[in-house]
Length: 187
Image (cartoon, rainbow, N blue to C red; front, side, top):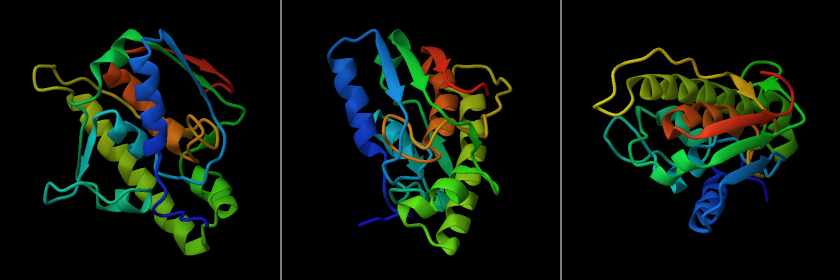
């Protein structure tokens, strides 16, 4: 059964954490569909990020919950991410949002209705904006720096997770401080 608004990439974050626990030095993300469109928020949550609504409560899992996002606290991301090389392997380069974006192209394959696609598209655009602010702000001891979150879905999924999960997660590599490499279409 598909759950396009509530499916989460949390399990992908658990896989990353297991790789970190095994002291790997390089992690290769193979992208492919698994019926989620949460921009990688679930994965990042499993790695210590917090995505909060206006009341300071965690947003609901999945892409639909990102519409309620007020802030992203990335300060709790697993510090071991700074010591690994992350390689993203993809065969597509859709934009994050819009008519050729991840929700529009891949959402219907995962059971998203036209209304779901509209909601997911808006929620992912909002998520990217909140991440831009959070990554630019950085930890309290870090000076402000301009950051632009790529609006590119580098495949239908990140770590077998979802349409639209790669772009947001790629932007967080900046805050992770990890070395990164791209294997796929240029972005």
